[in-house]
Image (tube, rainbow over all chains, first blue to last red; front, top):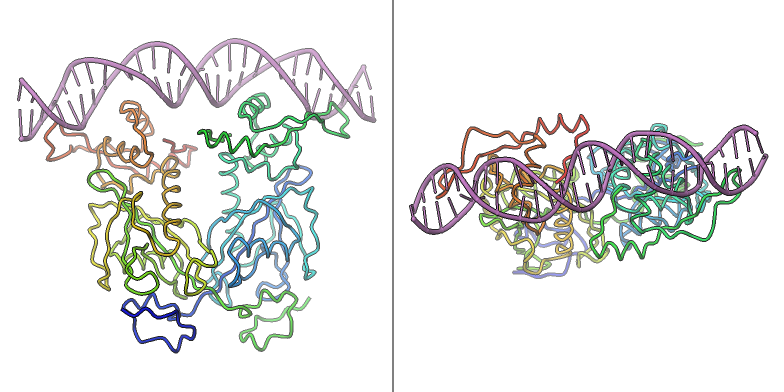
Amino acid sequence: MPVDPAPVDPVSVDPAPIDATDDLRQYPRPGLTVDCVVFGLDVDDRLKVLLIQRRIPPFVGQWALPGGFVRLEESLDAAARRELREETGVTEVFLEQLYTFGRVDRDPRDRVVSVAYYALVNLRDHTLRAATDARAVAWFTATDTPPLAFDHSAILHQALTRLRAKIRYAPIGFELLPEKFTLTQLQRLYEVIGGQAIDKRNFRKKILKMGLLRSLDEREQGVSHRAAQLYAFDPQRYEALTRSGFNFEL
Amino acid sequence: MPVDPAPVDPVSVDPAPIDATDDLRQYPRPGLTVDCVVFGLDVDDRLKVLLIQRRIPPFVGQWALPGGFVRLEESLDAAARRELREETGVTEVFLEQLYTFGRVDRDPRDRVVSVAYYALVNLRDHTLRAATDARAVAWFTATDTPPLAFDHSAILHQALTRLRAKIRYAPIGFELLPEKFTLTQLQRLYEVIGGQAIDKRNFRKKILKMGLLRSLDEREQGVSHRAAQLYAFDPQRYEALTRSGFNFEL
DNA sequence: TCAAAAGTGTTGACGGTACACCCATGT
DNA sequence: ACATGGGTGTACCGTCAACACTTTTGA
């Protein structure tokens, strides 16, 4: 059985290996991109998504998710972070792979498969830097965007579905808030994403009983009413609890 | 803002579009494959996974997940189903995208990104047809396989994690059983995948109260003890319940 | 008659939900 | 003093977990 090094030039491949479908160069390759659905909470507690306006074909002038082609020397995660940084200035955020979209006709130019990611950012810490290429970047209400390029509406929809589900069984909601936050802010977050009101006392009992929050020696500033206690999420306590069988659930 | 038609030939593109990373042909493309983790339950209620033995480099002779390159004219789901059929004879099964694996060095030959799927089959209905290319195919205990090619161990591990989680909040366990099954079979399934014993009375109460099972006018055959009632999962009832706010949970 | 699995209810503990008022602060 | 949100406890109810014996059937 021949054990040749991987052929570099497709034309030089030996004829018909036993399983021809394993031949690295037999078929032309689809393009491979990453796209990022970046969520943030605005000051009025609405869920926002970050979009860019396209300046080159196809879909010129339309809004789309930030993203671009994966390079040979970078992992998928790295590609997603790079595109996010290059196109929006956003760095150091929670980023998780969502789903890979591969409909044959999702890009009108050519076959392109896209690995979608979603990211959660704290709007206060991440003021948008104009993208390196001066393309427009803006926040839109997540449930009310203009028509999007490619199949990006479907990607956004799936990201929303994942976020709504995952926020209930994993402590990722904190990623949308500043490091120090009040229990009311946290509750609003869950109400906005879950789409329904939550009882204040029950919410507080439940979240505090989990023991994931450090209560800080600090209170809210600059409000014209009683200032609220500030809390911070404690990832180490979460790790410890998780290892001993605890499951986050809200 | 210029609104040019999409360039067909990359060479003819105007010099330096504003965002050069969007140029379809600027970078060489990674290879794109699909891999399938196929789970089944054997007669002794052990969770099995379907592997094939490689006959061509790299990893000659090693066991691996069935899979192969995605073609330009097929969707990712279609590619997964095609590879499954071609390499193992398995058709018409529950199949769901799992995760996309893109470590730079996961294939020693070249950069190859793989979209992983997992499938659930009923072992009785799917006797393995020898693969078209006469390569070996066999079932292994899912938690005790030989060393696998590429990063397939990581893929298998992630598929197991997904299965264990999802079986608890979605009615996918039935996919591993014959169409008609007993409550004890169903319970064993959950015990095997969850890794711990379940109380018989509580399990039966809970699953029957959901109203997802049709109890058939038939009993188990050929056992040397009292024959058990047979049930079938009713997808229509599940759809109806889901639409009215019901959530499967076990 | 023995072995093997089927089938069946009750109770106590716990967690979830519903619900209303006083407090602190800034204007 | 008023407006605004902060902060707190209890009672009911439903769900979950623990637990053991009788029945049916074939060998």
